[in-house]
Each structure stands twice: as C-alpha cells, then as structure tokens.
Image (cartoon, rainbow, N blue to C red; front, side):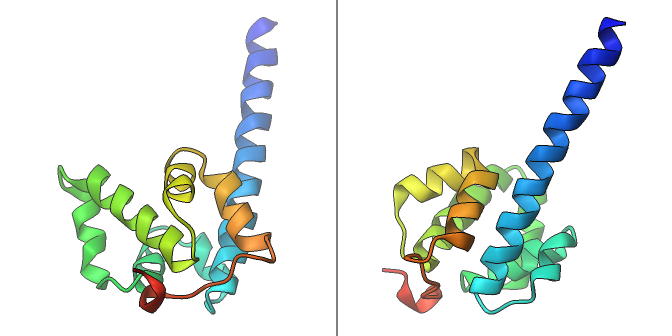
Length: 119
C-alpha cells in the first residue's frame, strides 16, 4: 500500500514540475519573440534557445559531448544575460529551471534584450 502512495506522490510532483517548466519556457519563448509551442519540442527548443542567445544551431551537438554540462552552464548564463539578468539567474536557470523560467517569462520588469544586450 505504501508503494502506491509514494508512486502517486511522485507522479503528482513530477506533473507539477513539468507544468511549471512548460508554462515558464512557453512564456519566456514568447517574450523573446518566438512561438511558445517551440518550447515543447525536445532538441528543437534547445536550438531556439541557442538562437535567442546568439549561438549557432550546431552548438546543440556539444550537449552530447563530455563538455555538455559546461555548455549548458554557458547557455544558461547567456540566456540570463539576454534578459538583462546576471549570475543569480544563471544559477537559478541551471538548478531551479521551472521557477526561473517562470520569473523570466512572467515578470513585467524583465525584458528580452537579445544577444546584442549581452555585455
């Protein structure tokens, strides 16, 4: 009986996580001038994020190399900078993606400045 409780709890928590992540990414994409549905397609959404931060599409291939984690951190930092944010948002996007995508997507004071706005 306990395993049913834990399985149900796990499914509910994963569902909440995914709902927040989808809503946050969708709104972040739209704020950057992209269609929100593009955030739903695996790999393609990474290509769009790379476009948003001014990097070429083929960087998506670097994610499957041993330096993939470093690339992800770099892209997270470039994404936070593309929205005029700094290190705190980089850390947040890396470790707490749903929350920070929601902040970027829905917070009125955060605007997309694009890769041109990266200092």
